[in-house]
Image 1 (cartoon, rainbow, N blue to C red):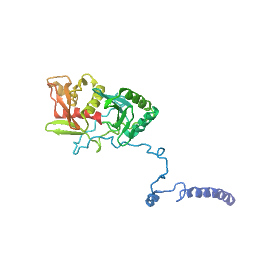
Image 2: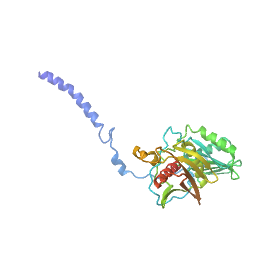
Image 3: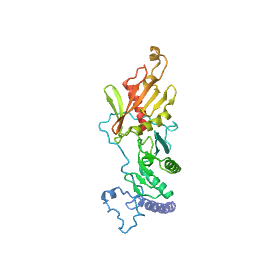
Image 4: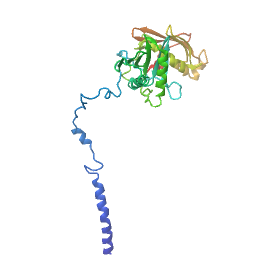
Length: 327
């Protein structure tokens, strides 16, 4: 019996040694070294400095970000507003990578990427056509060639950019067509930074929904033509359901939209309210969406154009929905 136990004990010795070796891996310098304390002793290293003799043409900023891209001043004391209704996937409202906007004889491109992403694509466009660059400034977002002037700035919606191609201050159609084709070809590989998740209202938001007496209005710190073009684009897409929400007319000279809209109050009428009301149907009503220029900012108002009641809550609901296109 003792010999059998001795043999079993001898067999367990290698297992014990193997376990001891394995557990040693959890030691301070093993495979599972806890380095949390190491970071408390870390000190900053000096910045990397390239030699003065370097070729300045080869070593430049990889992704220069135009500093002059963002326009408009932030407004203080913005009203606390509810998040805008998101443009769900499949709704038909998610933007293409490159889209056109037009007001009168002015046309420009809206790209669903930030200016830091679009700027290298514009430089690539100029190089691919071997244009002679007379001036190029990433900080100002401008490239000037003998043929045209290409300008880049941030768009009204967060994470998007606007690209213009001008000659003598007027839109150069042939250049804009070529730019649209060039940027569209890169949409598959471009990283889209414009999404509704990234566009939720934050402290960086410059738009203001405010109450003036019994009325609500939206203050948009952008020129009226840019605002009108953007709203026109999305109203044509979203206000296309007859009896619910429908774009009836758009007047670019007066900067107005006439829409048919069923308010949330009307949509949520319960059966008891319907029975005891004068109209047993749930119906929409005509609303005038009017833009007014106020210097460098634009005021958006919703004005009742029907005989049905249009409360302050109804007004605010519609304004929040429409202004959500610009976030």
